[in-house]
Amino acid sequence: MSNTPHTLGEEFPGNLDAIHALKASDPRFAKLLRDYDEINDKVHRAETRLDSVSDDVEQSLRRQRVMIKDAIAAAIASAG
Image (cartoon, rainbow, N blue to C red; front, side, top):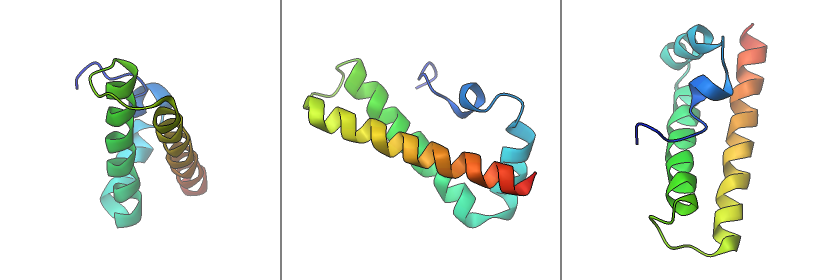
């Protein structure tokens, strides 16, 4: 979705060049980005009620998104 909140550009302003470089050079980092986008879309769909999920499932998805975002942030910090 084009207007999905919490895009990587919003979450990591000023780090897009580093993200692109890591994505191109590190397959594990590239997978983290794919995982983040997938979970972020699921959270957005749950929040906007496009998908009917329980509050527990929605919270679990949010926790997964935070864990992936933390891993992305750690990789960016290590590369810098």
